[in-house]
Amino acid sequence: MNLKIAVLPGDGIGPEVTEQAVKVLDAIAQNYNHKFNYSYADVGAIAIDNHNDPLPKSTLDLCKSTDAILFGAIGDPKYDNNPSAKVRPEQGLLKLRKELELFANIRPVKAYDKLLKKSPLKKSIIKGTDISIYRELTGGLYFGEKKISDDGNTASDLCTYTRLEIERIAHLAFKAARKRRHKVTLVDKANVLESSRLWRKVVTEVGKEYSDVELAFLFVDNAAMQMILNPTQFDVILTENLFGDIISDEASVIGGSIGLLASASVGKKYAMFEPIHGSYPQATGKGIANPVASILSAAMLLDHFDLKDEASMIRKAVDKSLHLQITTPDLNQKYDNVTTSKVGDFIEDFINNPEDSNLNFSNIYLGQSTII
Ligand code: IPM
Ligand code: MN
Image: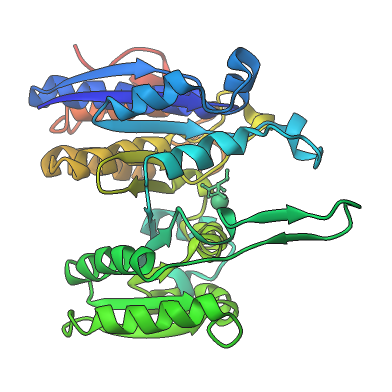
């Protein structure tokens, strides 16, 4: 398969983790006879620096002309503590989601057996967790009308949802549940919010078309508690934009590191693949950023094009790296100084030699490939 991929490394650790994902995609292309062509463009703080715009038109045009987008991370501390900044890196990502109508953000959350003790939560609680969060991505408070009064003392953000916006992601969530454990949990705040009551009504109606899928409801405050009390009760979680943002960061604690969580943002026409983590500015350039979320985002990209064997090969390689504890310092490490790019090297090497039972990390560790 020939794929044109727009690579938007972004800010902070974005470039270094994305580099590993591209490395891994190249290994897949080589071993499975595909051609992946990459075009790079700026987004976020780097785009503000270089083009005075967090999403330059050239970047948007590139994204619209490619088959898929691989996104790194966005954000720079120089904007975080300046509430009056008119231009912010995050606007680049939000505009990209909106312009490309990437209305569904899919975030898988899994407890890896090997990493159970890395989570601050009890093993017995998190073991077996396997959740797919369907977060609505182009509506709600993020995109509603924003106001600030002339005296600067009153502000508001409007939360609006239409039936159509709810229906389209609900269908995706129910379809996903059919391929999983046949359960959808709608997370809302229908005891207080009118928009949530519309979600409940519409999702209940859509659910009638999927009678083989159980539909459960949870208020978001209770869902936040259930996520750390009994996460194995969840299969597919369906929720609006802001609740999904919050609940997915919370869920990442189950996996042991936010550096493991990948995501796919899909619409009718375009698809973008991005780690859920941010730009982690303190770690930039130190080689300590975990590339797995970006690498697993690349696996989701392959899934999107139905390259199932290829995607599962990446997951197998990631599993192996976790099993052998060839990881960055956010996880259990067996070896010192395993850098971002060494993790990428190992995963690349595994893809090249999956049958090599002698796969010996010490070679990579010493800077030599296991390929002879
Ligand atoms: C995410 C991020 C973004 C969001 C930020 C960077 C705008 O936190 O993808 O979860 O809030 O959606
Ligand atoms: Mn977030």
